[in-house]
Amino acid sequence: MNEFDELKQLAADLDAEPLARIMVGHRELFHSNLLAWFYERLPEIADKVFPSSTPGPGSPREAVRELQNLDLVLVRPGARPVIIENKVFSVPTIAQLRDYDSKLAGWWDTPARRIVLSMTQTTPPLPAIQEDPDPTGWVFWSHGDLADRLDRALIDAGEGYEVETMRHYARLLRTLSRLVELARVKHPNEFAFLRPEILEAIPARQMKQGLEKMRAEHVATLLADNATGVLADSSMTHGTPIVTLRRRLPNDPDFSEVSFQYQAGQVRRLLVTREQGRGSEAKLAREAIANRRPEMFDLTSIHKALGTEPSDERPGFKHFDPDSIYRYVSASGVTVEQLIELGKSL
Image 1 (cartoon, rainbow, N blue to C red):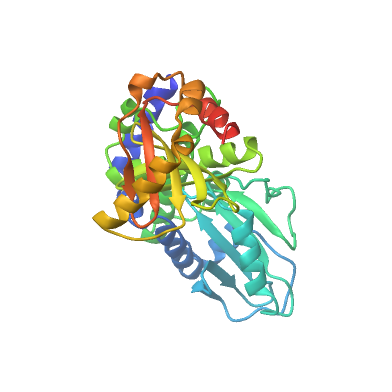
Image 2: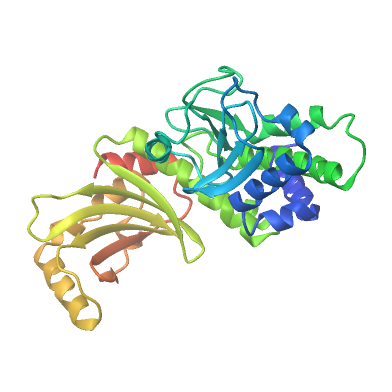
């Protein structure tokens, strides 16, 4: 079976799984709530699944949700607390984990175990949980490994409702992990965004958007790694992914930032003006600045990186209130490699 046929089968399997239908609307919330329920309802089995830790002061057994924005905190008598930061389609960042570290300082007498449960690794990568059985820092735990642990712990657990629910959950994790793996960028000559035929093969709209969001975040990470001095980020706007490469302009009298954006068949050269405002008068003011600085909107670097032509340029200026003005080139099928080259020209 080739990868495209496998992806279609995985998407169909997820569409047929009731837990997946519940998951797509809530994502991290679903996983954290279900794991908290599992920890409390099946404690003996859960203790075989969740990583063991060295003895600590402990507290009465409890699964705490959203404690100071931490997804899940597991406590039990005689053990150090276990903190789980849960990511599904989002890519975990070291900056976010450092922010959590500052919140955790002084909470317990002994350091809590800190786990990122995620479909994707951080950049730079964290140590895998199997490599460091009892660390004091953050470690990476894949959903695929969680599925394996669930399967082993549930072998002789009988057939009750709670047990069968967790068996379904293990299958869901394994299927979703493989789907995410297939949707990630494997080579820079791939299209930056998922191909239309792949999106058409995924029935659930929210699943499509989750995978598109994950793919765009992965692309932004690759761009940031390959363009010195350029910031890269991604988001979803109007239901479509957008990747932005940006550079600050601290000394420019008119503009505070220049960027390239790729979204929905457009590659934009966008400038953020120092003046802010909304409505027709504000747009006229931005265009007056742009007409006075035409060199800032030259699209030659886009043509050089993408192989497009001046005939692909769209006339005039477009705006994003309250402070952005841009020109763009129509271009579909832009690759990660082309965006990397574009970032080097910024």
